[in-house]
Length: 73
Image (cartoon, rainbow, N blue to C red; front, top):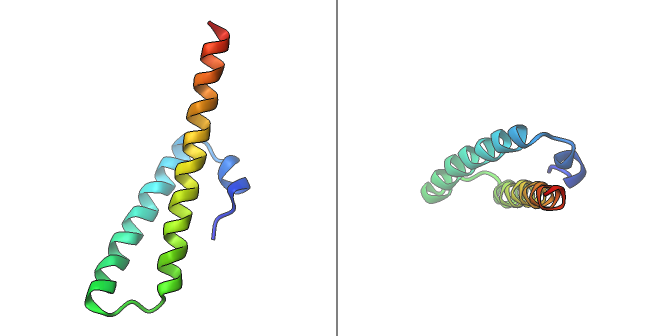
């Protein structure tokens, strides 16, 4: 499980890479789940939550960047 503080320390590019990595893992696990071969449903759930955390931090960064641009204008 990834902590939000760790994610906030990453750059936007690193976060996008992490997002894609998690999406690929989830896709593979989704196929395993459909075939009934999913070893750990908890891992699947944790990956979904990690993806949500990554997306949340990305959105926070977007909003802070937009706010800075607005204040700077």
